[in-house]
Image 1 (tube, rainbow, N blue to C red):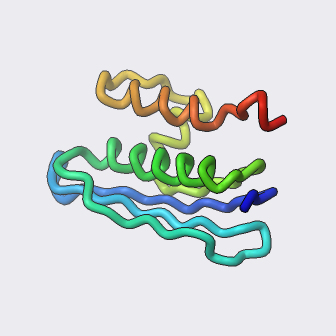
Image 2 (cartoon, one colour):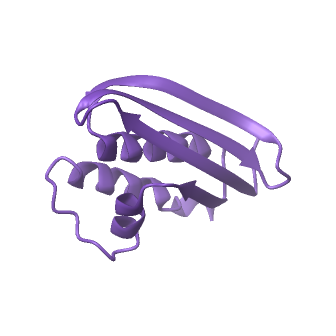
Length: 112
């Protein structure tokens, strides 16, 4: 099933920094109906890496679901400001995650 609009809420966190980490994500359609839930442990990592990985999981699932318009909510100021180009990505471990998010947000030309 293809969705015209999907609304994504993500969160990630680690106990300790780094420490055991987990991610969570819920995806709703444009009418507010729950479409998908993601909840998983991701091993040992930092809070910021977990936040990025939660977003990556949500975006990948939205792409799999055929979402054409995405509205995304997350609570990490660092990730939001990096994605909005207000902060540079200085951490070498966050840079590849930033690139993954960027690539997942590009619309496939075949889908236009």
